[in-house]
Image 1 (spheres, rainbow, N blue to C red):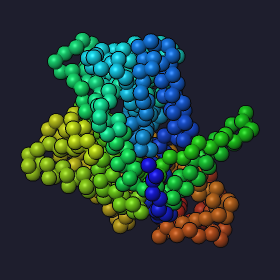
Image 2 (cartoon, rainbow, N blue to C red; image 1 turned 135 degrees about the vertical axis):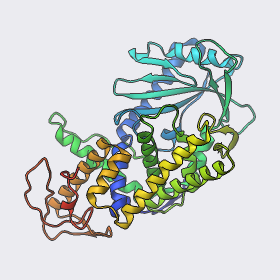
Image 3 (cartoon, one colour; image 1 turned 45 degrees about the horizontal axis):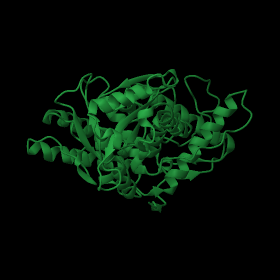
Image 4 (cartoon, rainbow, N blue to C red; image 1 turned 45 degrees about the vertical axis):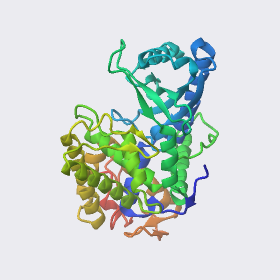
Length: 422
């Protein structure tokens, strides 16, 4: 499929967009880890085919699904350094006569002992836990013959023994990713802005390592639109909200569906985030009015129900609706200037997490110092780029102030928004 392109809006040129974009940058799967993930799942496939006789010539496709497939991977619910990556293993004819628990067990057996890593069978997948806190969730599937490409069933079985609750679950993750890509064209200014951010970060990492002399080869960058950035922020907000709540949280694939449905290519980052959040609020309200739980289907395969395990009750969806209303109110207040910088930073910490916001501010201060020292750019209240007349150095709680001259990055003056505030 050829993906259409448009210019889009650089999210770093608007004051509030820039703050949110930096937070998104702080939670994204780095391009280098994306490359590592691809290498790892390809190595897993080779291992299964080469060392396990039952899988020899029986893996028809081995491909990413979910966030990795649509470039929306972020750090997990538990920490800021873990990444869950989802892989589909489409299996061949040998597995068609097997029960769901048997297929999951065979996949588990084929991976136990793989490079000394921890391997755990889950209800629908088998997870490999790497030492660097990356997780690969490998979900076995069986292709529905005579149907659109990669329409399949996946296995659902709690185990350890077979039960009446075991079942084949309809799925077309591949088709959904094609649908999402069609609705979210590549936005060149977003791609280029984040490519520069990652390149700068990698350059700084190289300079900080005295043992490294050469700049590593750049990995192709993957974030492609403000819609996807907004989806990453929404997922992060959900993760923080549900970190201490029991039970399941709203599924990522459901959020991705609403992001694709609400997508308006060429929107700003804040407009995209508000549009998605308000769209979900509207859907929740409509379901609640009917005293029904949300029912969200894969747009390319109606039997693939994204809400089959959440929400279980109307109150569960209403709780998420209240969360989203709080998010919308906060963004609207930030956009209209109703929140002072100190109040804004407190709110950002609450909704996106203390560590992530601090990391984002550190990154922004570093970038501002670099730009000031190079005389390259500063930002007006409206987000326009200016060439500074004189360098401005950011004051910080961790460094002595050198020159508190005016600089307009986050507010009227940069020293109104400093690490000391955080």
